[in-house]
Length: 133
Image (cartoon, rainbow, N blue to C red; front, side):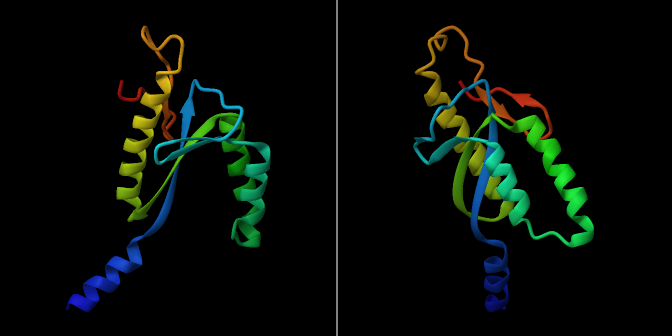
């Protein structure tokens, strides 16, 4: 019984990297704050993702069109990248939490921070959500 449960856990738990777009911040170089790495989404990065994707030939055009739509929306935005060990849902929860804390620390260096800062995570749903102040 325990071997079955352990095998099931190992199948779901692995090293995950959570990439979360961040709005209203500009980066010239990669930046690390705590456990979160910030980098800008570039054309080269999207091209690499498209070329390295393991997609069947019949779906390649549809996949590339999908990625180009995301590229149009997100290229130039920085992303908060958090690596952790876990299942997909828990990795996302921790990634969002850690990224929000790192963004809060970045606000210290924003001249408008004492008044109002508009640096926040940009969720995949298109909804903008302010990070914890």
